[in-house]
Length: 243
Ligand code: SAM
Image 1 (tube, protein in one colour):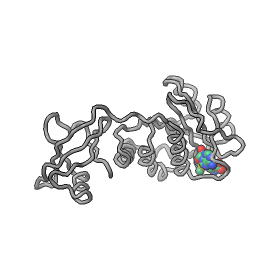
Image 2 (tube, protein in one colour):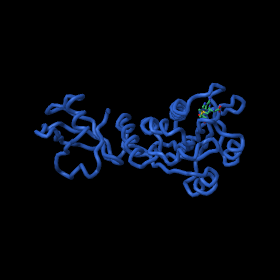
Image 3 (cartoon, protein in one colour):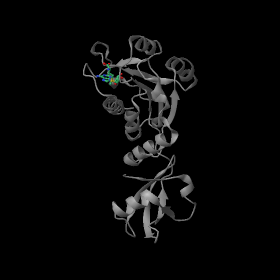
Image 4 (spheres, helix red, strand yellow):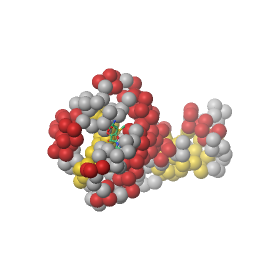
């Protein structure tokens, strides 16, 4: 963990911040926190900052004098529509997605998603939050991506997305070399939406549905990547293209 993230309720105005539990253990055992040392801090959904170690209490908690930046980090411009992968892959992905930087995550159904996946603990709010916080601590971000779960794909595209501020570009990732558009063509402003398919892939009707809703095809060629690899590469490409 590169940044220690505190809940807003753990940051009393005008008093020292107290690190407890796992984060205090990490500060003691990994960062070797000692009086005067500066640790990187953040407040969940608030600003980043740093804390000067004042001392360690007998119960192992650590007192810090904290200073905060004026504003929270900017929300990433990319939102992700992800067809629900196997639950163990989904669990692995929460920290990866938060560390790569996404503003919002739509977990969606698709023809090749097994229905039972939606009833697993990988989608429990406590699992999602813990995974996302781990990724934010890794990357030095504080803004929890907003996560919504959609058991039907078509209503997500036809009823939910139109109620949100319009995306300046929409992409559907599909391993089809004949249908590639370069992500270097990103508009300089506005939000971007990337759709990544299930482990069995998008079926042709779904690709056609996305195309009708303004999604441009995005392909990395004919090599088929695992969902977690595809998420990392595609989000990385879009960020590198200015997202
Ligand atoms: N069995 C599927 C197939 O043959 O198409 C593979 C699906 S892949 C594990 C999961 C998702 O990752 C795909 O639906 C797509 O969105 C994305 N993906 C994987 N490889 C890709 C590539 N070469 N280009 C673009 N997207 C890719």
